[in-house]
Image (cartoon, rainbow, N blue to C red; front, side, top):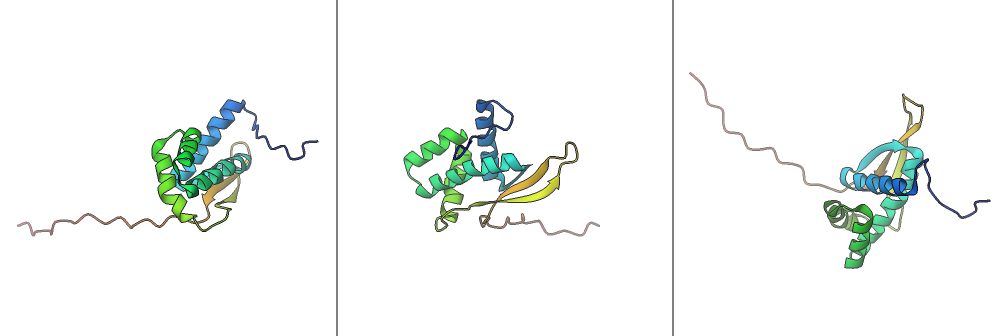
Length: 136
């Protein structure tokens, strides 16, 4: 029996799984939403939610732990600057999985893994254009 044993295999070697989930969590942090299969989303969700918990702590040790897992400094900076304060008052459940149906090629169940709350970003300002002159 496998009671209380949670090990994600996904048909890959352990180093490949660790790297893939780290990359998916980083993509989720950068993009806000990723499209993947349901087993991969459930595994990546665990990593992403742990990263948000580290970002909520916000200390140097937490930042170093996040860097050791995500391996990308700009992504860690974005995590600590954006998602740490965004989820500061939430006790958990930072992500959601939205099922979107089977993939066309192999009929694998696909889904979106996304944040429950999206960060409020300032709307991009349109560049000022020069007034048009009448050509004559």
